[in-house]
Image 1 (cartoon, rainbow, N blue to C red):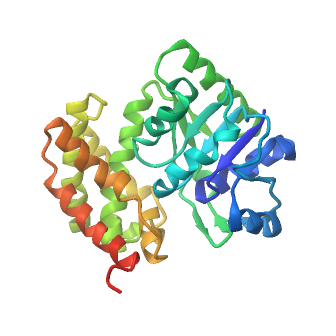
Image 2 (cartoon, rainbow, N blue to C red; image 1 turned 135 degrees about the vertical axis):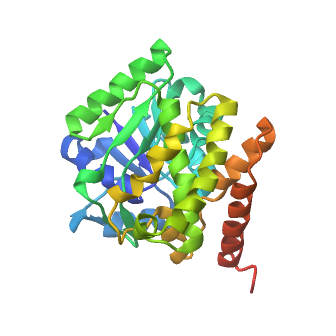
Length: 307
């Protein structure tokens, strides 16, 4: 099976060691261009203290399409990534997005067709910085699936067979849309509140005030999910309260890492999506809108608007 990965951050780097053990080098492609392509080709990448050489292909290179394209970029890179995978996508290609949020699959499907896209996300809690990735082996899982159309189920089965062969931990839930929204609920409330606080996971383990802020956001996301029929219920708020006790106290979410590293955040994909959909479906989201503008101010500063 020919596999192409676009986005070699924490998620892509976590999958790479599994895939490299079972897929011949020429069949495992990292899609990258420009200086990033040169750097990855010459330096490779360090994952959990093990060095990996990479088969890097330019977006412009014409080649046989991949059987599976894994999209694992940041949200602000998605539009370019959709263009860059063009030469990897053929008639029978499966596209699996492992991005945060609830909109990337639809954006990819608008270009390549809904029939090619299956839903997915990860529970990976890793760190990537300057060509070095670290993750805990026990924390990795890919959750993926589709609607119940027969052709989509066939695609899910093909990915399942690949993951089985590569020993990639995974789960195929009965209701992938609800599971996506549960992850979205966690990210919008936890990741975004943590971003404003520059918080470590221990903030949510020890500070009731930090969790009260999360709850304000979660109530709005659950109300939105009810209006859209995507499966969240009030009881999900209680279940989410304790989730941070599963994490390393000194760890940080991806948005905090982005802010501390002066990188653009995924604010538009998280809080921005809630605010936009709230207006569309008539759901009030004042707490999330406030959080959106607080993080946007951080992004504006990062982008040099104070200079």
